[in-house]
Length: 133
Image 1: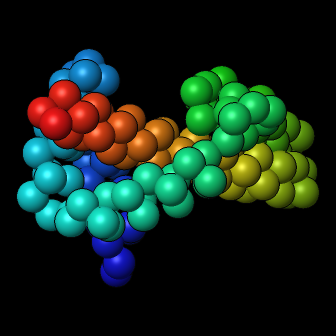
Image 2: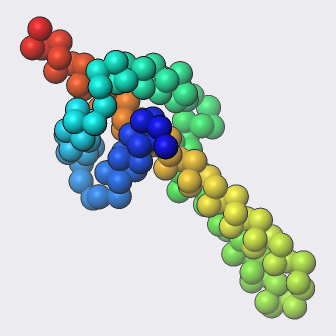
């Protein structure tokens, strides 16, 4: 696992805690400062700026991943309901398909949110370095 993946996993760990974005950035800044060299930070920042969305559906999924996945959870629920109520096994395919799509959308949004947190942290580190210089 490369430095890029480890940094994203650190951000995902921070996302699991209930705290403000500033607190998450503060805690992640210390972790990144200890484990990632300055050159790797700059390379990571360039990579993240190229990867993260600036608009469209990807930006919506990043900021509202649960809302974007909700229609697919609904399809999964209706497939389950109709499959049980009408005894139609084919309706269970909608349950599996809708659930899988909803899960992947939420996973994609979670990953993009972690990447955004890393990018914000790296920018905050740069700002602190500029203040000291």
